[in-house]
Length: 229
Image (tube, rainbow, N blue to C red; front, side, top):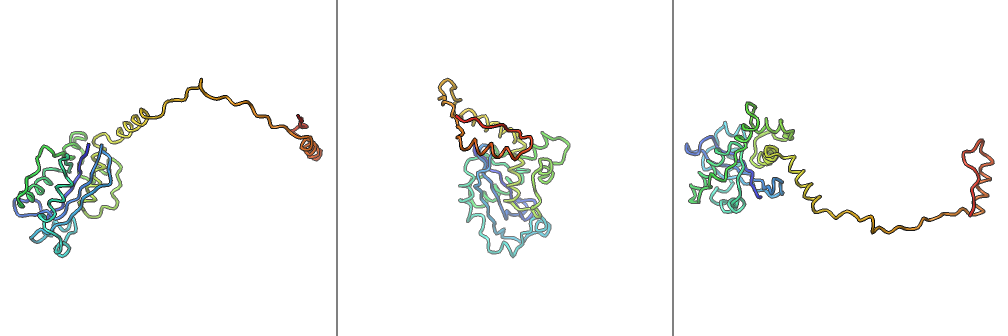
């Protein structure tokens, strides 16, 4: 089964209040295993970046000045997403901005039936615990030391690992192993094995003589004289 884990960065918290999408990162999973296929893009928001948002992701007006508009890369993004289920952390936020941008450029919005929210999954599995991406990475032993600022692709890659753990990650490996065993070569039929005759390595008369000469110089040798054949 193909799934897409994605994350977004924005100019603020509300598309309806004028905030815009500035970055999206997507990671492809197949049967809950990363394939190495990703999609990543920055977008010009057509509005100034809020200082509070820039403090989180580090994307400035100067950096985004030469980036394309969302509408210019819309087709490439939709092609990558396909019709796969879409996994996000606090997914209603990311879906809200993505669908807002799609509607703004006259494209069909994504069905919410495709939405998988890892925050909701974490709350069900670990009620009362912290459910931020950082907290879940710590819980599952996922290295996030390189996450200094939020970044859409980096966060999607971390979330992909979290999602696998939330869906029983390590058990997937057991399934793969069982499939390998199922398709392994059949056991060898011992009754059809070829029995080769024993090989005898005989000692020559010359070798036995040299061995006896060697033993004469050894006190209480462990070896006796060699027998020749």
